[in-house]
Image (tube, rainbow, N blue to C red):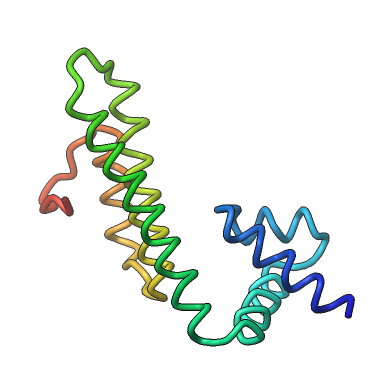
Length: 128
């Protein structure tokens, strides 16, 4: 019963957008154990519920992205404010990628991080 409670707790924390590393620190277990607990909880809930969770997460990410793009259209944003919003967009894109179980190539992540900071990447095509 204790393991099932731990699995559901890890899943609930993840649903709130807390990273695996943060969940591990809070629960006092390894990141790998958190990942196993979440997968186990999802298996207990069944495939239909997993798909519902994925859709809800995707909807939340999309809502944040819409708001971020609206913020970018506002006149008078400082460079620091723009960089902050761009970092949020990048974080949402990473979360969406994780949601679908895909991995970004490391060179793409580095390019996006550099571009979001407003720097030019010589010879790199924009990933936007």
